[in-house]
Image (cartoon, rainbow, N blue to C red; front, side, top):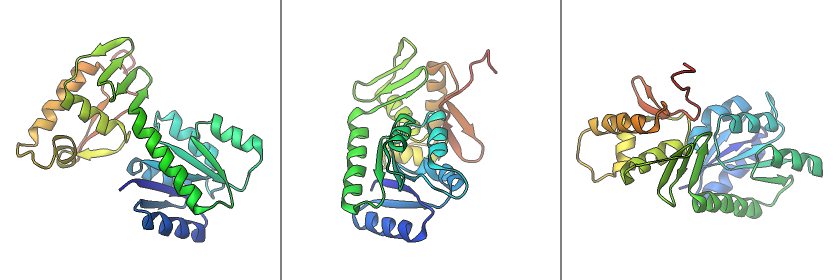
Length: 223
C-alpha cells in the first residue's frame, strides 16, 4: 500500500483528501505544519505539499527536502496558480504542481504517475553515490563498486528513506525476507561490509534501534 504524506493545514481539505486516498488503497499520513511534515517524511513514498502553511511555506519545505538529498516525489498544491509560482515550485525541485481547487480523481492519477515514474527509474543519487537498481550498479564517483544482490537490496531499501531509523527486525523482514530464519547479527555484518565498500559512513548506527542512511556523510578528512 503506497504511503502518501499529505501536508495540508486546512482540516477539512486534509480529512477529505485522506479519506479519498484511503478509499483508493493508499496509506494517508496527515501533517498540518512544515515541522510535522519534516518529521514524518521518512515514512512516505510521495509528498502532497500545500504551499501555504502556518509555520513555513511549501517552497521552504521543498528546499529543505532537496537540500537533505531526499529525492522523494513531491506534488505541490496551491491557490497560487499563476505561472511564476508554478515555475518556482518546479525549478525548486517539485515533480508536479496542481492549482486549487483540484479534482480528486486527477490528483490521484498524478500521484499514481509519480509512483510509477519513481519505480521505473529505480535510481537514487546522493552527491557522489549513485544507486541504480535497474542495472544492478552502485558507483561512488567514477568507481563502480562490487556489490552482491543482497548488499544492493539492503542499500536500496534504506536509501529510499534517508534519515529514517530502521530496526534490525525490520531490515531482516524487508531485505532478507520473512522466510529468513537466521540471526539479527547478519544485519551488523552487512553494514560493516557495506561501509568498507562505500568508503564513507552512509550507514549510521542508531543506538537502541538499528541503522539509518545518511545521504551526506563526512569524509575522514572532513570529520
